[in-house]
Amino acid sequence: MSELELSARLLGSINDVDARDWDALNTSDNPFVSHAFLSACEDSGSVGPGTGWQAAPIVLESDSGALLGAMPAFLKGHSQGEYVFDHSWADAYERAGGSYYPKLQIAAPFTPATGPRLLLADDALAPALLSAAAQICAQNSLSSAHATFIEPEQLPLFEDNGWLLRSDIQFHWHNRDYDNFDGFLADLASRKRKDLRKERAKAQAAVEIRHLSGSDITEADWDAFWVFYQDTGARKWGTPYLTREAFTLMSERMPDKLLLIMGYRDGVPIAGALNVIGRDALYGRYWGCTETVPFLHFEICYYQAIDAAIARGLARVEAGAQGGHKLARGYAPVETWSAHWMVDAGFREAVADFLERERQGVATDKIYLNRRTPFRKGD
Image 1 (cartoon, rainbow, N blue to C red):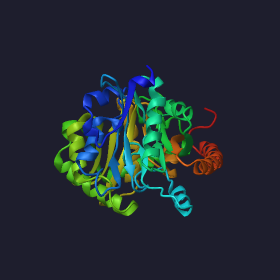
Image 2: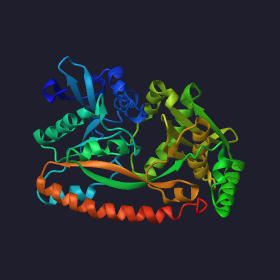
Image 3: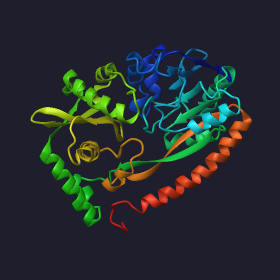
Image 4: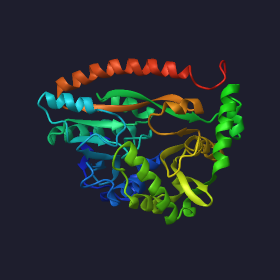
């Protein structure tokens, strides 16, 4: 198909696209670029006026109007909620007299989880969709475009079209066809295995832990979790990104994708973690508590997530951004990737130089971290 038969459009809402047409392009069934998740973010007010996130999906259509490509994109007035930090770029650009914001962000809002950022009927359409993003930046005085947490398979599509690649490190747990948690523990060094068992025993002795999903999750459960989420959000990043309504809408629109792991003391919920279920991964998202219990964070966020992934036959657990403490719990360092387009040639050159140096540091860090995993050496 030639580009002459295509047209690109910048929309004002994910709701401007039919959900079935959008999801038909999401062939990996990634939950965070699904119409359900994106529309829940918008319709709940988590994205929209006053948030610094303005929905701006870009679509590629045939001359007959068929949807052939799409980007989950947003006009951003700040760099919050992205987990790929470009504040130093913004400072440098504005010191030089430019306006870094607004910028175009191609991402799942508030979600440092890998996934497709180009939804395509055919990979051959990638140049047309990426060209549309670049043109939108140039025509609307946007400094740049940023696609974050790109699945590795799509990196060549960005790089081949002139986007600059950036890497960072997360910690993921990988399922080596384990039958149960003890099978995973058998792969660890003896001392680490004992440490994890002690942590689990202490946490489980203090609380009752339940897994809730689908219709098992009630509004009362979301009310309890909302308290946990607000507490963690206020301590870590100020104002929580998601509104209370977002959880209700996600529960209505993607119930089978949600796993709420809750901890109870005397029947009262005191801690919880929200996970999102993908085709081959469990994504840990939000955690919070109203009481401090030794090792409960590790138990609910990491060990129970491993249990859930094994039970579902999932290949990995992505436990979110940062957190070197995950290393000791069997979560290994994995490179994550983003891609960046700069309109100004001089700015692009400066960023490219920075990224070259940064990649070398990230590669060195990964080697160091791999040597410190708790797994038995020589395996």
